[in-house]
Structures are given as C-alpha cells and as structure tokens.
Length: 498
Image 1 (cartoon, rainbow, N blue to C red):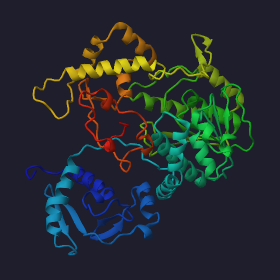
Image 2 (image 1 turned 90 degrees about the vertical axis):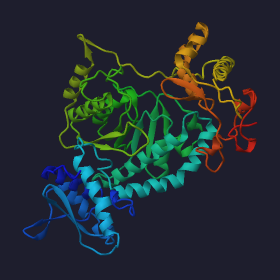
Image 3 (image 1 turned 180 degrees about the horizontal axis):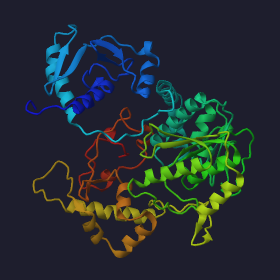
Image 4 (image 1 turned 30 degrees about the vertical axis):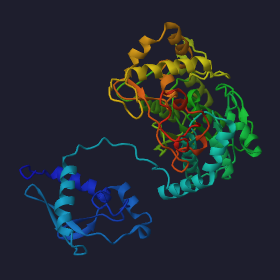
C-alpha cells in the first residue's frame, strides 16, 4: 500500500465517502446525520455549500442531531499519502485509531469504484417521521393482522404482506401530510387482499378498494373495512369512481392496471401513487421491452413515468423501504396544465395499435387459475413426496451408522428421470413442475446448490423464536411418520405434531 501513490481525485473520493459514512470508522454509533461540513481555505474553516442537497440535509433539525463525543481529526493529502492528525485527546486510543482503523478505511474507499448514482430511498418524505410512524403501525396492527390470516386460512406469507403494506401506509400518510393539497379520500385499484385499505382506514384516512374478486381476508375485516372493499372489474375505458371526494388513486402492485393508473387519474382528476410490479402493456399483454440495456423492471418503470409525463402530471419518483425488490414508486401530482381529453385519447389509441389494428384490452379473469400444487389431488402429491423422499434416503453413500440418516443428494434431472411420464405430466399441468412441488414441501426437502436436492433435517423450534407462532403444531410430522428412525427431535422441540 505504501508504494502506491494516491491521486487527488482518489483522495477526495475517499473523503466524500467518509463524510457520509462516519459510522463505518466509529462502531460506537449506529448512524450519522451530517449537521455541518466545512473546508479549509486560506488557513480558515469556511462552510462548504457546493452540494445543495447535502446542505439541506445537514441543516435540517441540526440542534437535535448534534453529537460532540467524537475524536476530532484532520486528513490531508501529503506526497501521495493520507496524512492524519488527531486534534483531540479525548481517547488514549487515538493513535491506534488513526493507524489501524481510519487510514486503512480511507485507503480502501479511495480505491473503490465510483458507484453509479442510484435512487435514494424515501427522499420525498421526512425519514424520521416515517420511521417513527412505521414502528407505531407495527406495534398497533401486526398481532391482530396475523390473527386475521389465521382465521381466514389465507395461504400467503403474512409477515411479507403485513410489513410491506404497513411500510407503504406509513409512507403514504407522511407523503399526504407534506403535500400542499389537503387529503380527502383514496381509491386503491387492484387492492388484492385489501390490507392497505384496512390499515389506512384504521388510521383515519378514508378510502376504498376495488378488485376483480374477493379475497379470503375480506371476510374477517371489521364491517367498516368490508363496506369499503368493492368486488368489481376495473374496466380501463369506462371505469368511474362510486364515491365522491376521492383525490388520490393507489396502484399497489396492480399488475395489468399499472400502466393505466396515470390515465385513469387524468380522467378522474386525481393525484396518484403507483408502485409497479409485474410489467404489462396498456393492452394487458406482456410488456415489450423498450430498452434492453437495463433490467425489465427498470424499463417498465421508465415507461410508466413516460405515461405519467404524457398525461401532464408533475412526476416524482421515490424508492420505498419494503421487503420487496420491486420498490420504486411513481407519484403523479396534478398541475394547472392538463392534457386535453382528445389528445389523451388519441395517445391511448396510438399505444393500443398493432399492425394497423386496435388491440383488445385483456383484463384479468374473475376466476384465476391456480398453479401451485393446491389443485393436484392430495393423494397424488403424498405419493410423489414419499417416492422422492425414499429415493434420497436410498442414495446415501455413508457406510457408518449415523444417529439419524440424512440421506443423500440427487440432481433435479435424476429425480425427474426416476418419475413416470404420467407423474411428471400431472404436476407440470397444475403446479409448474417438480421444482415447485419440492419448494412447496420445504419442511421436507432443501435445495443444496448446483441443482441438487437433499432432505432437510428438522431443527429445534420454540414458540418464542418461531418466525410465525401461528403455524406451530398445525400438521403431523412427516419424519415421525415416514423416516425409518422417526423424527430426530423430541415432540416438545418439533414444529409439527408427533
């Protein structure tokens, strides 16, 4: 490291990272909010005002974020090296800190590549207010929502949906409080299980949810929520709101409706919030890539933004903090300049044209075909699961007796070749194939990498550390019934019934 010379560009690159990541060199603190940045000019310290965004962030709520318990230090570029001077004697470890912590970190940062400018999370809302509200919503709603899942016998992952929709609700509440226009009511198009509609109404934000079909959860919500969930197809060409006062449309992973949301908001005279997920054209067909140089998701988000701009909205983009990879949100705010109805409809017709003909809009069916093994006869599934389990047991190469036989590993190809054509065809038509079946039986099988499948050894689970206590002791233990040595766990330690 000593032999290499540090350029001025590398020096400032490292300093820029240090300014925004001080916590990386001081493990006594969790995070840093910069309150002031200064640079030395002509021997004097002066405020650094080059970066407007950083300056605004520094000065926001500065008194409440000030911390004076740091070891102050000075970093210079001297003869191609970092020259660190400790200015404070608050700690007797200052010299070691400079040599073994700060200098190596600065050097590492100086050699790192500059990141492509990425979308900053939660840039449109006050982060502290958002975090406080999100924590409050979790305390207030999580347990009751888990009970709703259990009562309705909903099969989807409750924690994923609950935490995601609570985060979205917190974001919208903070966003609405910061916009100039006073919030009146919302309409959630393609509301799915209605969770977001329920939480927002529970927090005093009136709104309604529309979806092509009811979900299991709708039946367990309080009456005030049930009355705000409407089972109705959202027909893009003719849809009208049934209630007065709605000034925001929401598209939360609304799939085929996502590209239509800016257009519907224009027709209905509302603002909108769109969190796109699966990409579709206005016709309802699979999205056709415009830019193959970026991901399909980014390409679709850009397309949705273009539609928003075309409709005359003030277009904003933000990235949410939710348990999903699809977390870029588009916000459309009404402006004084609106697109004429004729121009908008001409634009829509142009988008729907293919080979000189207007394509029919393909809407989601009221009854959705399910392909996740739930439609396969349980007896057939049980036979296949036991057959694969026995194959894995018999493939063990260990000669010494083990306290519990874990079996061997087989490739997906080997498993498929051992099954009959009729067996493979049966699960292929209903659940997508053998891999989906094995994933659904994750308590029995595990994916071991390189396309290998093995037997998952049961692990001790208690009610205290279970990810979802509501799923404990609900089904019979497969290993207790089918493994030649039974389940390796005591009944009290097993997640399943012995």
